[in-house]
Image 1 (tube, one colour):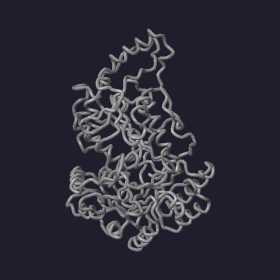
Image 2 (cartoon, one colour):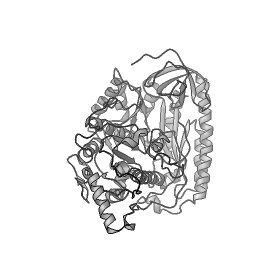
Image 3 (spheres, helix red, strand yellow):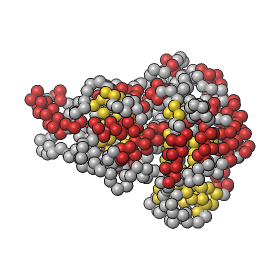
Image 4 (cartoon, one colour):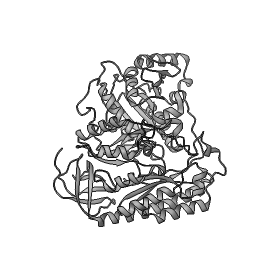
Length: 557
């Protein structure tokens, strides 16, 4: 689960995703794959800094090299083959009843066929594959979208069966330039490899890039507003054939049965922060909280479905409740959820330092049903740099963290940190390293600063040279390795752990995540995915996962 520095990429199997999308016999190199990979607090991926900025969209059609007669014939064939897609088309955004600003692109011409290749178009299908990049909030949106699609008769396929799908939804991320490039590459490759696939652009990328850019990348439907339920309605109405193949709920696709055993649940969206380097408020809007009763209902539903862990997620999770009437705090919601008679294990995805409170710390360190794990996006340890970036003072949060560690010495705490922010000096960098070395942290989530057009930091001077930022990133990564190794050793010495089993490996052993956010392997072939297993620790395996011997065979749920 632990990785290396860089851009946020999508959850789920990192490499198998693109293996399913490639045509048989064609290889995919790591450099051009655009593969979304798994990440969450504590999981990082390598990102090389880029000075290219946002890539311009390029048309990929090759019709210009053909005669007028050939082009006309190709257009005619494409229209016959893809008539359902163009039925609702318009060049401008068209808001449906659910508030989704959507535009249906005109058909994109497939690459010319060789003369020997039979021109037999595939039957129109309504199976959907979801490709999600980015943070826990986007992953949570994917879960809701998946259920909403299934409820509307659109089966959702595993990513490894993407070649069998008729519709692909690309939830793109824009936190870094690398993430945005990944979304663009994904859409281009889908269109090139699967010309008959209906592509939906969604998520933060669609909101920021806009309809025209997404259409040039090959999107047939662009969703720039509304939530996942409205997105499912638009997909059903605009792209899915009525009564077409796969238009009924297939076994294993029932709402809530996604196969994911640690489920992100979005309790909040949007952000009221104005960090100089961040594009997120522009694409997610103001902070908005999901009402208490709706969160309770969803947690109860997931508990009844046997989900072992729910990760409470948001763009600014710690700000939950501030916009409600009357205003509430995240700790109020947690107390309500912890009182439920049947609920999964709960985890907080992340908390902004300014929203860390003594009450919240007390719950995280003292409640058995809440994972003893905090993740804070501190970004830098330099007060001056934080002020220049529009960030809050860290001092109150650091005092609360020290109090938390005094109550619970083995509390897992990870942080986000960004190397190479504009105006960052060597002294700022050294202050960050000194702070991180002083704290008993479990891991770092390291980013290299990536300029985002339209943000104040993108034009702030001086910008840190690319080589300097890379050196600072490597220094933070070396510290991250030391912190992770030390925390794993402390976990072994603790003597016990509780594991949410997420999958069964090739050897028949359970693999999952501990309450303190460590990867673990259950040393038993008598466990099953989707259970909580408590046991004694027995060292580390070759991959650094904590070995856990179960106390007893877990009860089936």
